[in-house]
Amino acid sequence: MDGKEVDNNQAFTEVSISEFYDKEDNSSEQQNEGIVILTAKEEELYNQLLPLLEEAAPDRAFAIKQRMKDLHKLIASIARFPSLLERSDLPGGIRTPELLIDSLIKHQDKGDTTLQLPSKAMLGKAFMVSKIHTFSSLTKLSIMVQAPVELTKALQLETITIMFSLMAEDVYLNLLRDTTQPMDFRRSWALSLLLIWEHRNDQTVESIAPVLQTVWEARRKLAPAFGTMMGTSELIMMSMQMDEQWIHFIQAKLEDPEVKQAMEEFLFGISFEQIEFLKGKLREQGISAINRDEVSSFLQEHVKADAGLDYRDFYSLYTIRRDNARARERMKLPGPHKTLEDHFIQYVTVQNKEKQSKDVFAK
Image (cartoon, rainbow, N blue to C red; front, side, top):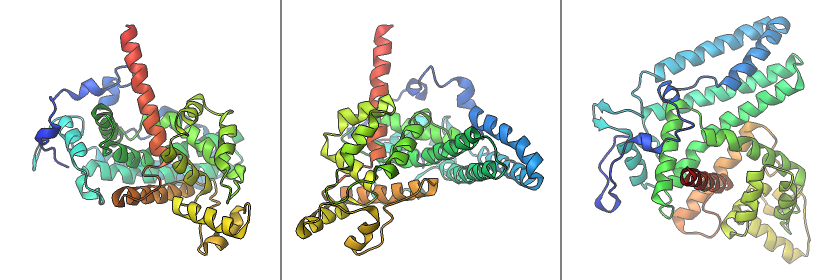
């Protein structure tokens, strides 16, 4: 995507992109280091597992080391593309981070944005998919060599966290295109995209990934009553034992019909339209509730309402909810126009902005 001048009704005074950095969390070292192949935590976990693999399964250890070399080669290729955080003289013209942010906000196309995004963004996504598969393999190998349970769980959580980083790209794109949001929020989300594309990590995602992972696991244990659709109240009870930020989100936002509908889609694993159909169908037949195994029969179509804990299940169901939300928004249909993840990250962004303002005022 080449930067272009914004139109008159969206004109802004150009400022340095450094003004948008969290001074405490984005040192010059981080800004210049390019894509992070392994975070400090990921490298620590890898170094804990590797000796166990070399002792119990040398052939698997060799294969995983070759995979790591391949990831380094992939990063070396991506690094040859111009930084998205610096001014670049490209064949199509000058590109600056500020112009790129303006362009991301200006383009409101409803279709696929693949050809509008920088090459570095698309190549980086391929790297993330490879990294996710690599850590999934490490988790399986950890189980195979009977590594400590804590190590296996930590590797599984890292796999999920990397998956959330991939998912965050979609979330930020959805949010920055929401013209009802304040412009400073939209520019902040656009900057978050640039930082993800440049470094392939995101501090917001790292903080919320364990929360959403816990909600996802709890979702399978709730066994919601399809028909009465009372799983939301159960989630509130479950939430009281969870992360403080998530509790505040539930308390502040669940009264919003849009958030409640997005929550129900997340909990039940079926669409808003299917939920409404089920409610009506069961009312007609005088049935109070059904279990997950009966959902497909009542809907007369196969639905994967009981997804497992695999990261691929989470991402697959997220993309279904994302695409449904985009379609409703585009066609002005009832139901949630954002996913639960959209709402949660938006809430976290607002809270972080308020905290930063208070911190600045306190100084």
